[in-house]
Image 1 (cartoon, rainbow, N blue to C red):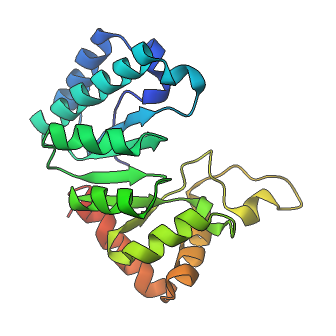
Image 2: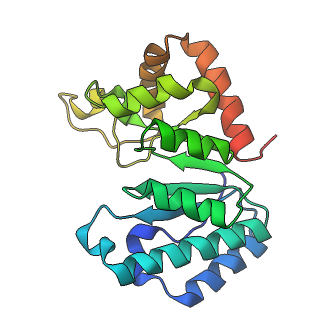
Length: 208
């Protein structure tokens, strides 16, 4: 298993400057594959408050600097803030890419991230026929720019939510359902797709 430490934007109120020092210490001491999840999140009304949002942006920028210093890709968490994330990545001239995790943006935003070296993370959300925006995105950008993920315990594939025994906890065991739906969506065989996604994952995280 690989380590990717980061200060998540959703918990911005709890973050203190010393947490950044602690993060740097982890990057120095441990074998980390990426920095994350980091990014911006305005899903909650209170996170849109100018002071709180400014703090999110500051911590995001500071962590991008650490990622650059330690030559690590990043795992992006973005909710209702795609334009600002792209603007900060460009302003910081961030070159190491990574994964835009559990992507919820549109086609242009996905293309903007791909241009900056990111792969687009697809979760169990793809199994939902109503997730039209996501279906449009994956078809527009194609398999070479995608990775799959569970985002456990969230984003459980539809079939696992409706299981009669009980709602199963979302774990990596459910990844085949994500693969299956994505393959159907892209009209590619599961074996070809899984090979491509594996290559994409290694390349996004700079693993051989």
